[in-house]
Image: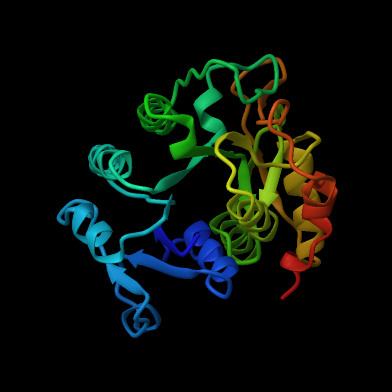
Length: 272
């Protein structure tokens, strides 16, 4: 493995992956919003998902592995991944696609495993399924689908949103009947690093090995953030418990890369 290209390397997850990998591989990334740290980094290329052809960057970098953490216009994402699939089919190159637990959000009675059929009620989940189905039509050796649950971390959008709500005394939405598993940027990027080192392909579920109610998890996080008097807005989408969790069964990672939700809560990511 010589060259890695991270599409969406200026976003929260993409940038965490870049920081994990760039000391070990010849790693490149794309950014959209202008920031001096990206503009001055010779390893970064500006890429407008809606205006630019991803082939231009692919032909310039000639990566051995593409990691897609793209965000933005859904139709433009679909088109970009069609072009990426065309590129990797004719070259010695693989694609790791960051997918989501939302590909299963139409199922509610059980957690989901790697080989379960995908079905989503959300536009976001259906986007991820559409791109996953694209990848499932190419050889398994050419791709990995990395399904990720809710991601936390000190600079994560979710933690920033909670902190802003606490500061401004605004309500924090919690879902009392939603059962989830979770991860953070540190755990996720370590797992991805392992998959790259061991040349893994296929479908992987990268989250905590245990489950917790969304309300309980958020309340524990708020308790760790300081001495606040939070306002919680409890949102019920159903009268029964429902699951939005991706657990591994057929593609297990080594024990040293497995973790539980308490480790995510206890991790120093919540310290200033």
